[in-house]
Image 1: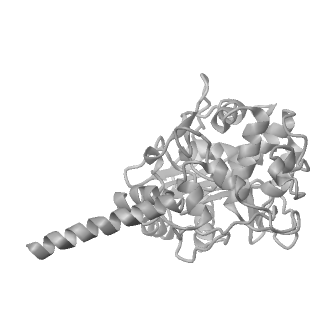
Image 2 (image 1 turned 30 degrees about the horizontal axis):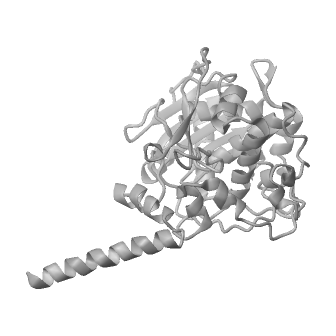
Length: 381
């Protein structure tokens, strides 16, 4: 008994010392990460984590525009392979939209068409859409405007807002989703995200090559907010969520109560149907119900590779060819996808808990091809 008391005493002392050291050396955010992830039974960020963070509301309008159901709605069952991977990889929503009508949809694991889940990096495509809107609205001059116009701290670099949007900024950043001391983990759990970002330097020549870094989009979001004078959730609501008739309010995670800066690189919580609206908007060259919400030239540039050496990325959007078909897409951690084939007028949405195990930063994992291939098998039945 004496030994146990002594052990517990020293255990408490060691834990208290570790906690103190984390705060002293400015790693206190790790404690929040442990609390949010491990204390909830997870080992990484998870799709329904929004209740553990501060959020801003992306408000729907007074008039909504529900996606119509196709005349052949849910008349075809999932292929055997699709059913298996949906189970194995924890799919919670799988939707096929054909000719702007929902042709097939299924929900799993007690989620439904109204369930909110985390977009993760699909938010990068949405943030880049806000850049296009800010240029349209005159808040930002063009893709070539230097970021130093908004943050003089970067006067030493020629990095532009377009370089941020196309992942070619030269930013000092390591895209690591597992290391607790990584800048990516800090960005997700820190309470002062702007301070974290402005401590990062530009260390490479901008505009030369593609390098996927979440910090690029975060800095871009900060610039959009500074240029417009509006919180990102408000500007998103006014620019797209309401004009596109989203049926539900959405949430955008913030760093904390005090600073209330949106995590622009990730973390918009919404549902499959409303996420799909951005696929339709880009498929239709920025037009929604006859109104030009986004400049068609900006849309075309976004879904065209900036660098021939990196054909997978444009400005905030990914691209992939399968056979003779050309897809552009929004992609997020753990396999959140809005995939578009404009020539076939097809949009595929998949949301879920995991990707295929061949995952890597910035790589196209096998699951993407499988979700596409099985959708087309169903469509061709």
